[in-house]
Structures are given as C-alpha cells and as structure tokens.
Image (cartoon, rainbow, N blue to C red; front, side, top):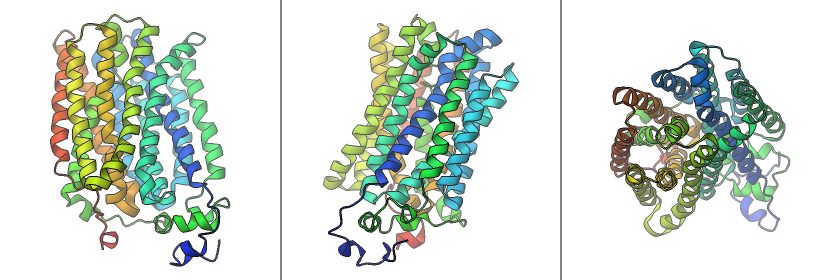
Length: 437
C-alpha cells in the first residue's frame, strides 16, 4: 500500500500534479451490469406468469402469493445482507449472493407445483436481497460524496432498463425454448459476473493496484468507511424519526411499483387485450420511463442542492415524484387506448423513480459507515410494500370480478401518503454519533 495514505492531510496537495486514475468508475460499471442482471432475473417471471398459471392451473390469488414469496424473502434478508456487507465487505458477500440467486433463477424452471415454486422464489429472493445494500456500501467506500447520488441514479437507470427490455428478451427466448429452459439461460448471466467481479474488486480502494496516489487522495474519508463494523447503533437508528419516515416512504413507493414486475403483463392481456409480443413491448414502457426518471433525478438533485441545499432538494424531488406517480396512474385508468394508457403508466413510473436517488442518497449520508445495513433496512421495509401490493391486487381482482381500476386507485392513495411523509424527513444528517460530530 502506498505509504502516503488518504488520512495524511498533505496527500491531496502532494499528488496534485499526478494524472488521476479513474478506477472508481469501473465499480459503477460492475454495479450497472449487476443491476441489469438482477432485474432480468427478477422480472422474467412476470412475462412467464401467464404460461406458468396455465400449466399449473393457478388462481390469481395463488399467483399473487408466488410473486409475494420472492418479495417476502427479499425484504427479510435485506438487513442481514447489508450487515454482512458492512462486516465482511461487498467483495465476499456480493460474489456469494449472486451465485446463490443465479442457481435459484435456474431452479425456477425445475419446479413442479405451487409449493415448489413458492419455495424456489423465496430462496431466490433471499439471495437478491444482498444486491443493492452491498452496491450502496461499495459506492460509499469507492466514491467521493459528490459523486454518490449520480452513481445511484445511473445504477437505478440501468436496473430499470434491464427490467424494461426483459419482457422483449423473454419473448425472444420463448420463441426457441420453453419457459423452464429460459430460466436456466438467465441463471448463467450472474455466474459470469460473480467470477469476474471477485477477481477484480477490492473492498478498500487503497488495496487496488489500479488506483494511483492521486485517486487515493480524492477518496480521503470515503475509503475509511471500508473498515469492518459489527456494532450497528440500532438504538440510535430506531429511535430516530428519520429512520421510520424513510422506511414508511419506501413502503409506499414499493407498493405501487411492484405492479410492474408482477401483474402488468397479465393486466395487458386481460384488461387491454394485448397479445404477448405487443404486450411485452408495452410492459417495458414503465421501467424504461422509470430509468429516465432515475437519471433525471440524480442530475437535477445536484443542481437543486446548490440552490436550496441538499436536504430540501431531496425533499422536493421526492414529494413531486410521489404526487406525479399518483396522478399519472389515475390518468392511465381514464385513457381507453392501450398504448396511450401505457404511456401514462410509464410517466407514473418516471415520477416514481424520481424518488429513488433521493431515498438511497439519504441512506448513504444518514447511515454513513453503516450504509449497507441502513440501506438494507429501508429496502426491507420498502419490500414489505412490495409483498402487500401483489397480494392485495390478487384479492381485489378476485373480490370484484377483476376490477383493475380499483387496484390503481388504491396505489394512487398510497403514493400520496408517501409524498406527505417526505416533507418531514431529514435526508442528510448522519445518525452515527461519531460521524455527526
């Protein structure tokens, strides 16, 4: 390791004349690739759902529980996944969880009844839970503070676009193989990523041979967050209103969003009369628009922060996002033309994802050196909303002779609640006493 560490206050000046390496940006590249793979593996089941339902003779409620099985496990393992990243480092944890979920992606194609499918999707979700908390931990360690929210916006853009093109990808693959073989094919992607990542990545940027002295100087402070931690200040976190408000707003956000990777293809076929090929194209619109929302939010946040401060910039963007999502969902219900209805739903997703960089940026600043655990806790609570959404939709459809409009009215109301919550959140002050001083 270079004897002049970033902790040396003269480091930045001493290396000012050295051309700075850009190794940290490859961490963003790895994160982007994994986000795409994660969403392909997650969203492919929504496109295959009509085929699975037909083969296994599932009811809408049973399929709702299949969707929810993933989300329950995904939610429950968020905190353990983030905590392990804080303790062991993202390198070991990400490699293991990606290999785990890739296996159970393939195993989805080996299921034979309702119980086996529910168990497989739950085990798949347990693996995927470690993804974003550990990527957030890696960003916190590898990126200076002013680059983190932009990195989050690019990460979520990539995740959403991975999901946006998944329906078309699944339809293409299903032309050549059945839905069971399709899951096996998608499972291979994560294995390749895990092998390359393990040999390239280092938890501490100071240990990476491609990071030169100038780049190490730039990362002064950020790299100190790489050290292992086990004593998470849970009492301080749980006693803070910021924590509870972040959890609650993410519950509201996820409740509405989970319609897209679960029920949307079924909605397009049943309520809008779309055949699989065109339905796959339309099903990708919300996630495509959502990705743009993530990117716009990330870059808009930096500009607004210079004018009104980081805290109010995040509050404003998130509240506008939640409100816009509610309004555009209602507009989609009132439009008769399926294409225009999906454009409106795409705009709802755009506004939904304006919230994402603000929420995850808040976790990095508020959680600090415990960003993996803290972001995992927010994502856990959010995914409880993702659990509720598909199940509630299934029950509404069963109880109302498939009244799809009512499902959107409920989601719009939940979004508006989330907008109100953001007005009371402090998204910048660290809760760890050592960092707050």
